[in-house]
Image (cartoon, rainbow, N blue to C red):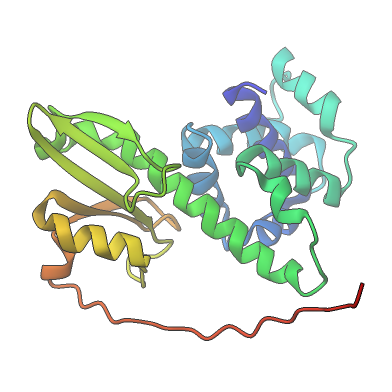
Length: 244
């Protein structure tokens, strides 16, 4: 699918299943869905809304949508190809379209995993939306405007992006919050990197996906106004043994 097709598919899903779709993805409002889905797909939140409105006249919901104009051809192709999918099929398709390697989350899924999976899916989507937001916005920030970007999100190196300009560099760890405030966590590796890099390490926090995303930059976060506390968890793991 092209990027536009994915945006259209998300709009169709929200239009057809309405509040059921919001609940399945863990969103509390359509605006939150537009923001997180729009950014995570590399598009604009307004695009998701516009595509949802395009399909609204075809489904039973409380919105009239764009009922006074004929549907454009490329929208009708997506509609004809997917509108007959049931809720489960469509939900799985949308998640797999947006979340990289989503199918791996479904392997060995147990009943008690289902509700937990919703929170995981939303966390992944919010994180991805925050990362795309950063890539779209960092050049507009004076301190970063001359820097070149390298995406390190898949390298497990303790930060998401490395910005470089001649001999100078910043390592950026991006976090996303649905509200204007909330809690964030650093992994042990992220904490270690922040500890060593100090002012060359920057937390880039994207807040308020619920309404309109804004951002905050915190350099040398371990020596800032933020107070981190160590959290240790004991995990009980159940194994099954047999004799051969």
